[in-house]
Image (cartoon, rainbow, N blue to C red; front, top):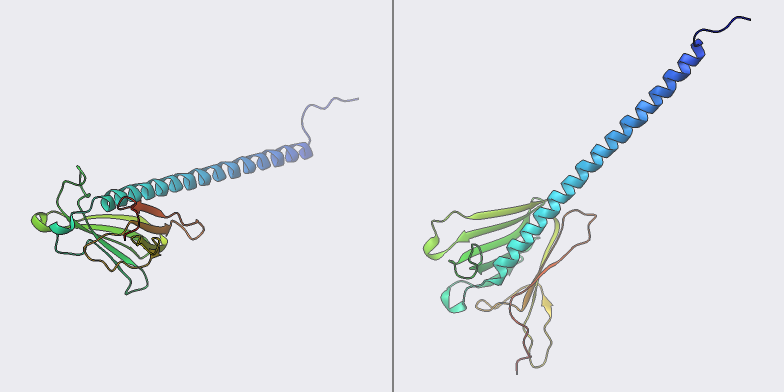
Length: 197
């Protein structure tokens, strides 16, 4: 009997095939891990941008000038086109909030982007307008909570007809993608009150 000193051709082919399958599987796993990491990073960036826009809008909405200090409406919801446009006056564009000059802020959705644009008014007209955007936004909507009366509880409405008054609260709703559930931003603009008599 002679002893065998090497591998047969069949054994070599099987070893190469098994090695190739292992490398292919490892490559696919690595590609999937990279794609998942990229998606997570993109989601985190969008979530962070969404949080910043929400904080910015909250600060701007909470710091309105006194009605007697301005000649323009304090808050307007325009619905002439398909997408609502929210315009309001704010002293909360720059720190310290509530003590600065008055800015006109416009919030709308345009070209799948939420656009927040603040333009200085009054003595600071020469200052540079500020713009913040949030991409891939769909389904923008605005609602305001009216004042309570002696007969009726406050109700949400789509417009705001009072030029020198602000609603009790405002709700802005948008989605970061069509698959996401809308997460409204609700900002209380004035303390809760008892019904008026």
